[in-house]
Image 1 (spheres, rainbow, N blue to C red):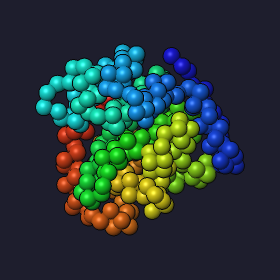
Image 2: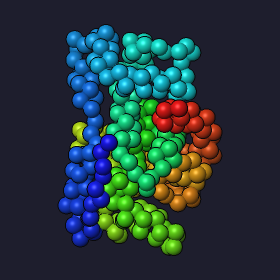
Image 3: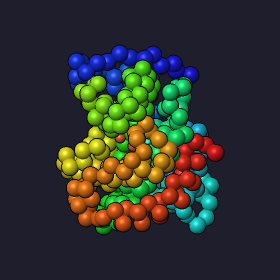
Image 4: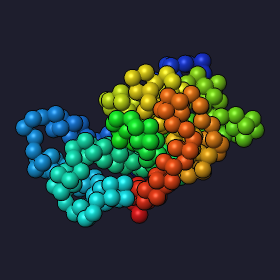
Length: 295
Ligand SMILES: [Fe+2]
Ligand SMILES: [Fe+2]
């Protein structure tokens, strides 16, 4: 099991510190080769269901995890999916790629010991935000809202990096959060000159994930600056605020409803619509979160 040496970065280092931090974590945690090979196979016109299933079968542990996920309430297929071939043909390549990404990220981080972070709680928060971001996008009638799930799921990945590589600084931040009542995001900016959103976005970009994933992660606390992926960033922002206020898991933020109203307007929804979406998402969240933790 990999051990983690704490890193010292200061606000004075600015983005140089951000790059150093992300490079350090990249040495410990990376996506498996199979993810990139799957990316190639997906754009290869000669690839077939069988050839993709064969590629996936080269990683039995990943296959087992994917099948568990495929059979979770997230997909709610009427019959059990028992083989990887069935998964590929039933779920479709886009979602297979998402499943591989999600399982690979969880697997990559679970090998790292940390007393500072409750992984179950962290992933429960993440799953809840991912599912709710998708439902909020649907409530706003946004085409492609399905794709909001992954940036929602990975939105606080930078926090995980901070817990692992900057444990002392995380302690100070959590203390300050308690004593000042201020939001973590602002405190991070003061202490580092960037936030967990920048850290997560930079790591995902370094892993060569597409901007549709890393841009909303980077801007989930300032979604109006989300550019081309602003609506996705808005959905993640609202989902995050809602999930925090309902205390479903935690990634270290305060439990309060901190929704930027402009964000609701951009999506064309109101808080009632968010509440309805949240009711639909809650049940799936519990089931999917359990799959994440492998029980
Ligand atoms: Fe966040
Ligand atoms: Fe969050």
